[in-house]
Figure (tube, rainbow, N blue to C red):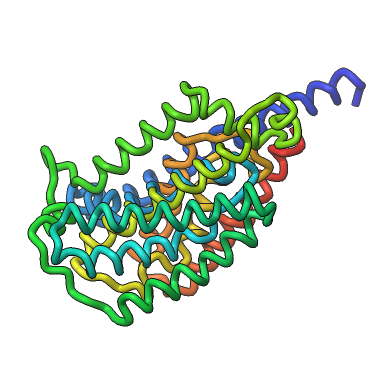
Length: 320
C-alpha cells in the first residue's frame, strides 16, 4: 500500500468518524424509527407518538439545563432531586392557587441552582462534588416536605398535564419553546458566547475579563429552573406528587442525551439540537425494548451501553 493510498484511507476514515460524531445521533433516531415501523405493531398510531412525545418532554427540558452545565466543563447531578423538590412544593402550595405553586416550585429550583453555582464559582468546589451534595440534600428536603405520594387534584394542573393545542400536548409545546429559547441564548447572545468561552478555558476567560463567576451561577440557576419546570410538568402528567421516585436517575438520562447529542464533556461547545435528538433516541430505545416485551433489566443494560458509547464518543471529540 503506497503512502498516498494510506493517507487517502486515513482521511476517509477520519471523515467517516467525524460524520458519525456530528450526525450519528440523528442517524440513530432514524434507524430506531424504521425498526419500529417495520417490527412494532401500531407504532405509527397518533396515540403512540403522543405518548412518546409526552414522556420525553421532561427529559428534554432537564437535558437543556444539563447541556449548559456541561458546556462550562461542569455537570449538574442535582436535577433529579430538584424535580422531586418541585413536586413537593407544588403539592404543598396548590392551596394558595396554581400560579403561586408554580412560582414557589420555580424559586425552589433556582435556589438549588444558586447553591450549586455559588459552591462552584466562589468556593471552588468541583461541580460533580457540589451538585452531588445538593442531589442528596435536595431529595432529603423534598421527602421532609412531603414524606409520601399525594394525589394532585387541581383543574389547572390537570389541564397542563393532559391539555393540547391542535392535538399537540402542552408538555411538548413547552419543551419545544424552551429548546428554541436555550438554542437562541447559546448561539445568538453575549451570554452564550461567554458560556462557551468559560467552558473552553476558564483561566483564559478570566484573563480576558469575562464575568466567569456570574456565568457559572447563571448556568446552574438556569439548570435548576429547568429541572423544576420538568418536575412540575411530570407532576401534572401523573396527577400525583411522589418525591420518592420522581426524577430518579434523571441526571443519567440527561447526561446521556447531552453527550450523545454531541456536547463534549470537556466543555466549550453546546449542541441543543443534538441534545433534543439524544433525548428522543433514549426514549425510542426504551420504548422499543418495552414494546417487544423485554424485561426491565435489558432496558437498563441497553441504556448502560449507550452511556459508554456516548462517553467514548465525547472522548474522541475531545481529541480533535
